[in-house]
Image (tube, rainbow, N blue to C red; front, side):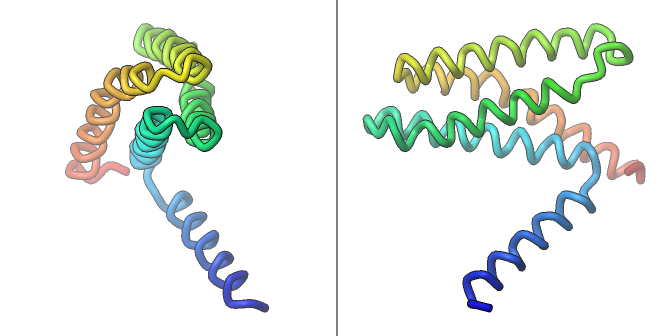
Length: 134
């Protein structure tokens, strides 16, 4: 077995355990962090006219927004879930428009829109952990 393959397996095992052992709010925060990072990277690449390279982080950001939207419980979540659903629909549409229009400002707009939600989830997580709830 090559060193590269061994290192890759170790990394994959670490990531799998990190996700499995994390609390639900921690996972949401990680998803937001990933999405925001991909949006910023996509925006940077569009600004540099590196359109082909920008496609991957933009796709990954779109996928994460889609996952966040897919796990919403619209039946039990009430108005909050319905509002998040609309927000995620808007974010996905705006990301696609920004990508098709090579518009880095559109990606920054979505990141700026969703950053406060990430911060709210992180704060909720901190309070939950401080209360000893997992």
